[in-house]
Image 1 (cartoon, rainbow over the protein chains, first blue to last red):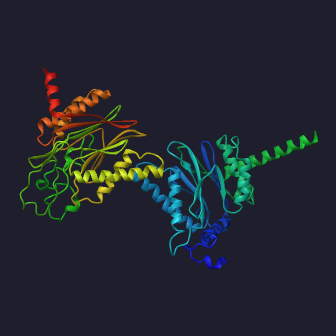
Image 2: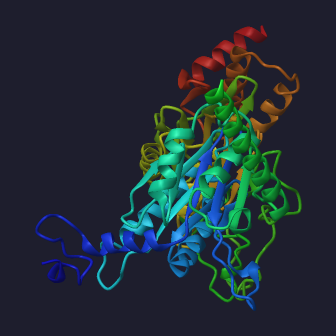
Image 3: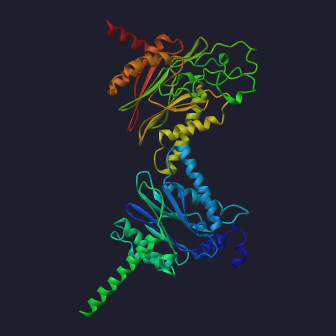
Length: 251
Length: 271
């Protein structure tokens, strides 16, 4: 049945599905995980780094990109599609600065990206973008924001979210662990992001890439050393927790 | 207002190079920029273009558009004062023209040059501002509004639009005042006067603004006085003085005073 309605993007199925869009969402689910956390004075983006071939230079594979000084995004899905979307978003950020003489708000650029994606779900001869994006940043008034877009062109604001492979697992972890104490300080927010990724990433700190934006500061990519330190901290905390539980049980 | 067929374009428009000098053209407000105009820029239109057939037709007399409009910033916002006379040559077409266009409850635009051009483009600007507000859930800034207007008319540059307007408002960065014209100029400033009577108005406002902190009443008085003096000496300005005050909550129309009444009032004060 689906076979007849999934050829053209502009055709609805009898039960109201746009199959191409749904297949695009499947493509997103195959991409490597990305997680975003909105703290009080910091926003954190973490991605699972795919293992790189021996001869490949690591630096050319970047899943976290700046759109402007105060906004950046991570994506999950088709890297090539993401490149196009990022380019358009970067141009729009500058156009906005030119015509309105103000930097974009995170919501504005998210809306722009979402509108772009929606346009591709409604034109002939084009297929939807196969990416979901997590867009983070600070608005002019200092409020931190996190938005997620998906191939259908919808966008929502989130306190914390994950996209890509095993996104459901990570999201459940975040739902349990995202509390006001968990994001009380910058460091805690970063650790929460790492903890979330460690749920699904195979070999620990080596395969995690983390970036943070603090208010009025540009994007900062954490070095692998810093990530390692934080991972060891987290593991120690876990051990301490396990010890406490054992003691409780024994007493 | 304008003597369309006695105007000649003297603009430093490089696209004019090689083109014939046109008889009826764009505005000449370029020379009327406020104190903040950056010296040495192409904002001064006293420079003549290398018009190839410049020696041909006689240099026509340049008439500035018959009007006086002014606006200045002060600590409590922006004062906008305009006259209300429209002339067609030596004939006074109307003494009751509304030269302040209410773009929206917190943005005002003044009119100088072609009345149709000004009111049309400013109404279009009002539409754009409203759409911006709906899309972005916040008011548009004065800088952005003036930029939109400037970009809109720039597309028609050289096609004969005649508009010299001041976009005045209050946004989250405080009072805003921009001068925009159909040549594509867009300048931010604290004081602008546009039109044939602008020089007289500048004289009054410049001397009145010496003391730093004006109260709202003093500032309104100054604006009124400046327009009155301009109408006194300039034949192409007259009628009534329409005075507006833009503050943090929006604009409000302060007064409309007939110039003749003002004349009697000031004469009585002198005595």
